[in-house]
Amino acid sequence: MTEETIERIPLETEGVKPAFPARYVRFGAFQIDLRREEVFQNGQRLKIQVRVYQTLLMFVARAGEVVTREEVRQRLWSGQFQEDVDTNINTAMSKLRQVLDDSPENPSYIETIPRRGYRFLAAVEFSDSPAGSAEAPANGAGRIKTEFTWLASMLTHRHAASLVLAGMVIGALVVLAWFSVSGKNHKPDSQSKHVASDVLSGTRELHR
Image (cartoon, rainbow, N blue to C red; front, side):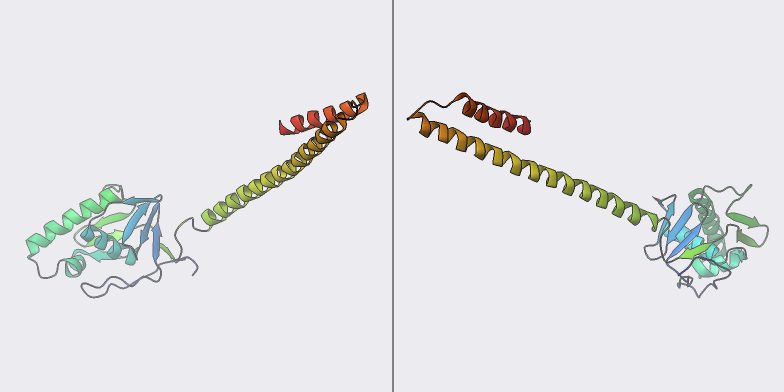
C-alpha cells in the first residue's frame, strides 16, 4: 500500500481503537507500530503509558481537527466523576507532550484550543512497511554477497596453491627416491643435483 496522508479516521465507540488503514503511522520523527502498540522516535522505542498511547491514537486519527475534552472523556474515562476525569486528561496531555518533546506554548504536534479541546498539527502518513525498510535489506544483502564472493575467491586461490604445492612436493620426493635408489649403483651427476635443488627451492617459496 502506498503512503497517503490521513484525512479523517472516525473515532469508534468506547474501548474500540480507531480503525487505521495500515499498520504503521508516521508523523515528524515518530512512528507508531499499531500491531505491537509501540511508539518510536528516530528508530528508538519510547516508553509510553497505555492511556497516553490511547490519547495519542485519538489525535493522529483526527489530525488537523479539534478533538474536544468531552470526546476524550467519553472515549477513555467514561463513567468516572468529572473532577477525576479533568485531572486524568490534564495528566495524560502533560505526559503525551513529554513523550513528543512538545511545548504547549509553542506546539509542533498538539495545540490547545481554549475551552474546546486539542488539535493535532503534524501531517500524518500511514504505510504497511516501517520507515527505512526498503534500504536496510538491500544493503544487508549486498554486504553478504560481497563477503561471500571474497570468501569463495580466497578459497579457490588457496585450493589451487595447495594443489601446486602438493604436486611439487610429490615431484621432489620422486627425485629424492630416484637418487636414493640410483645412489647404490653410482653417484648422481651435478645436473641431477641441481634439478632436485630447484624443485625443493620452488616448494619452499610457494609455501611461503
